[in-house]
Each structure stands twice: as structure tokens, then as C-alpha cells.
Length: 279
Length: 303
Image (cartoon, rainbow over all chains, first blue to last red; front, side, top):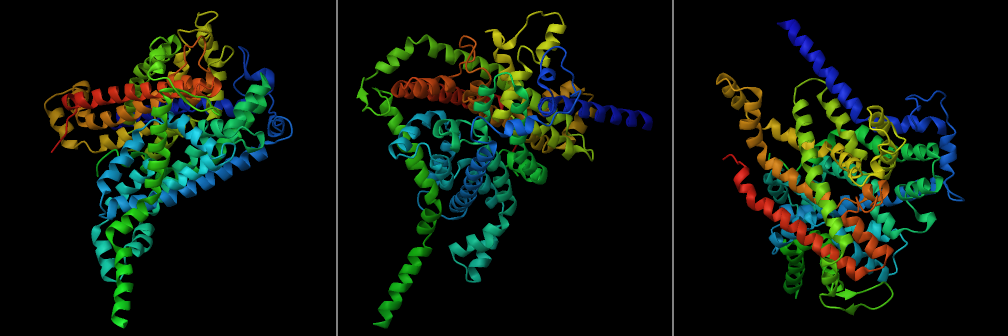
């Protein structure tokens, strides 16, 4: 009986590990390809492991097309992602506090508006928003990619609201008796307790902004302003069948996201389920 | 004199601490974005959809002309059909897959957290251009997957050269990003009371019976949630199609979002593109509404 259970456990783990490897096979294939000679990447005779590990794809790719290197593109992505994430965290925390804890007139209306915005497909707004930024002469700058993030992101507002609703109201009341007002309750009571939710927001919003392709495609056409996601696409188009450097830069572009995931995956997992399941 | 001064200070203080003031101050970022980045663009978009408009010129009113043209536009009709194909095949596939994996990973072992993290990796990176480029080669005519299929006897098979099969790598790329649906299902599974299963086991129900009589009904509100979220994101699919197939071959993967993008920015038909996005929005709202309407028949709520 006991042996059968051990056997079943072993089979379970074998299956889960094997299937997991199949799931991340595309990532492994990309990384291995970035170390291969051009002739070994594609085709019927392509080996799984590189027969000789080639590092040259990385410096070759880093040079980019022409005078602008991937250093510039990574810098641009970092600027957009860091500022965008900062804006998302600050504005979403503020709005979620108002909607979850302050009984102001019209709160129900703004809550409904927030949910509707969350469900609205962005493509409907793509063209008119572009026209507005164009009228403001801001197309070709980072502003259309960063500024809206300082005005709250409904997904994260909702997530933080759910978190704040879970905090006991008695905390607010006790703080009020100790002389706090609505502002200091936010800064001294709610904000410190919001920690886990803030980390979740940082991780998810950072990788969404980092991976964003449509925004940069619309607003950034100057080569020196391109973000990594946009630059890789252009690089791939220009390199044709020279896949090694392209896979090298693709692998590099995923590293920041992977690092965040490595350190904060628990928070990320909590954030994904927040709001979908009661309790 | 002093009394009035104190009173005015006090009223400023009470104004600042008034719930309405605090509420609107803190909600201000969203109020601004909702009016300036959602309402105004939607109104503009509605107006442009009745105009011909290119950037740099002024819009000229054409009434329902755009919508009339849309009804006869074969490319647009096709883009709706292929989008429906993508959604109708892709979303259920993704949800079934997510549920199966979630059930597989409910077994309480010490490695559970690690397994969930590994199975989440595709969702973490799947939306990126890097993965789209990998997909393009992985499923390309000289890639390992086509090699495998050709090895099985389908000589000359090629996903991206075929109008019938080009959608499949895109659907698979979407289904592959099952991670967040999986986590949502997993937390739902955890909330199903254990005694339901124990009772049914005593009654002699087998594993399939238990799945269909306990697991599915208890999960139905979560299935509804996942279904709606995945439908919306499925209808909006853009990056993968733009990078992997760019709508081809012969418009077989020319999804609505991609079509709107091309119409608006490549051909500069901004008014016409706005009209398309309104049709898309109404279609999505209709389908989502229909699902909500029928959901009372197939979702089961306790308490």
C-alpha cells in the first residue's frame, strides 16, 4: 500500500516536471539559439544543444542597426517602465483609498466608471487618444506613455481597493481618536499596511509596461527613443535570417522581468487572483 | 475679532477634512483620466466615425457613410470572422487547459509553489515581442515544430503559408499563457469544501462524476469571470498577430485590432477606423451581455 503511494507520488512529480519543461521549451529554445551558429538554429538538422557555444551573438546584437546600440533602447525602456510604475503606484493607491474608505458624494458613480474603464478595450480609444496627443504636439515623446500612468490604472485601483476593504475599519477609528485626520490616516495607517499590494502593483505594472508594444509603436518613431520591445522588432526585420543576434537581444530583453519574478513571485501570484475570488 | 478669526480657520480645516473634499482630492487622478483620456476620446471617436478624417486636415461629416461602407467591406467582414474564429477556438482551449493544470497542481506537495511559478512563466513573458519573434521561428517553415509534423508524414506542411492553419500558432500562443486563469481557478478550487468530495466518495461517485457534479458547479462563478476576462483580451489581440503574421497569409489572421490599426495609421483613414472600433465595441458588448444574461442558468452560487 505504502509502496504504491510512493510510486504514484514519483509518477506525479515526473509528469509535472516533464510537462513543465515542455511549457518552457520555447524559452529554452530561444536561449540556446542565442548561443548557436546561424546554421544550427533552424532546419531539419538543427541540434538541440549548440555544438559550439557562440558568445559573439551578444556583442553583435548589442550594436543594433547603425549608430544606436541596445544600450539606448534599454535605457529608454527603463525610463518609461520606472516612471510609469512609480506613477501607477502613487495614483492607484490614492484613488483606491478614496473609493474604498472615504464616503464622498458620487463615490458609487466613480466606482462604476472605474469598472467600466477596466473592461473597455483599449483599441477603441487608440485613434482618438493618438489624435489628442498629436494635437498637443507630444507624439514622439515619452509623455503619452508615462503621463497617463500618473492618473490611475483601473486594474490596480481595483486590486488595492480589495486589499483596503480587507483592513479592519477599527484601525481608522482608533487613528481618528488619536488625532489623525483623513490625510494622515492614509499616510500613517493605510499606506504602510498596503505594502504587499504595492509590491504586487510594482511587479505587474513594471512588466506590463516593459513588454508593451502597441504604445511605443504608436508614439515613438525616432530610433533614439525606441524602447526594447519596439527595437527588437525593427532589429529582427532588418537582420533578415541572421537569427542569432536577434535571439540574443530577445533573451536579454526578458531578464528584467525574470529578475522581478524571481524575487517577488509570491506577490505576483497573490495579485493575479485578487478581486476574482471572494475572501 | 479673535473669535471670527478662529472660526474661519476652523472652517477651512473642516472644509479640508470634509469627506467630499478628501474623496475628490484623492480620486482626482482617476477623475482626470476618466474625463480626459476616456470620455473625451470616446466622444471624439464617435464624432469621427461619422466623418472622413486624416491627421492634418479637418474632419468632414459624411453621416452614416462609413458604416455603410463597412457593411460592404470584405476585408472588415473577414477580420470579424477570423477574430471570432480566434476567440471561439482559443478562449475555451485556454480555459480548459488552465483548469486542468490548476487541478493537476492542487496536490499539496512541498514543490507546489515552485511548480505554479514554473507554469506561470509563459504568462509572464508571453505578451512580449521577444516571445512573438521566437514563436515566428519556432512554428516557421524551418522551425522544430514544423520539422516534427513533416517528420510524421505531412510533407511540405507550413503553418504560416496556409490560410487554414496560420491561426493555430497564434491560438496556441494565447492558450500557452494560461497562468493567470490557472491561478484564479486554483484559488477557487481551494474554496470547495472537502466534505462534498468525501460525501460523494461514500456514495460511490467516480472521478468524472465528481468533476461534473461538484467541481464544475462550484467553480461556475469563476469560470464566468475567467471567460469574460479572456474574451475581452482575445478580442483585443494585437501584438502577437502584428509581429508573427502581420495579418497574413491573405488576411487569414487579420484580426480586428490589427485591421483598425492599419486602417487608421497605415492608410490614414482615421474616421473609418473609428467606425470600425465602434462596431467592434458593440459586438463585444453584445457578446459579453449575452453571456451575462445566460449566466444565471449555468452559474451556481452558494449562500
